[in-house]
Length: 232
Ligand code: PRP
Ligand code: URA
Image (cartoon, rainbow, N blue to C red; front, top):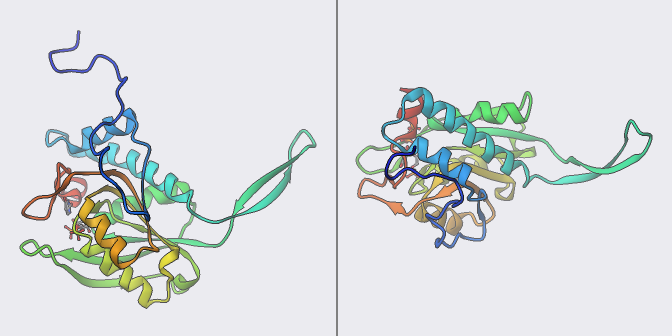
């Protein structure tokens, strides 16, 4: 028997955040009961590190799969084993991943699971603990990054300061904003609005959009510090 307060069946999908209007460049995953349940696990402060990693990895995989839907395709016809022709599609153009360290590194294996031997660049940006302002320390990108579609990886979009700085680094290396797909797990409405205001061409794909930010510029209800929970 379930105890008091426990759900008995999963008929109700997500309800939280349904009223939030997303900017035109932003998309979130289908707000299913499964996704809500996975996020509930990683949001809980009682979740162990190993469970946090396991369930965060599952959501990362879902976000990566959704991100791949935004890449351009070309028509392609193949012959099947029945001898018939199948008029299908193939991806057009090359891609790379770029992770915003440290937390973005957690998304690299999910990307590699979907895109074998994908090239990955790294940008180290850290938020100042007091001011929440981002500081750029290091960037190492594939040498032909300007010719690729970039899947920019960071699980958390709070104020948007870090990702805006990362986008600037990519643009300074010749990447077109319209070829950047920013994949994240939890976004705030403020962060989405800030990215849209500066770079409306950048497509943003989130698993979930939360209510807002607290006085420390952490996402609420959020899940805390993603990097600490995944890596420490
Ligand atoms: C976190 C997170 C984002 C950033 C989001 O990283 O991974 O990069 O904060 O906040 P913002 O949208 O307000 O910039 P943090 O700088 O804490 O470093 P970490 O990756 O080492 O955890
Ligand atoms: N970074 C995180 O890891 N979590 C937040 O809520 C904000 C920034």
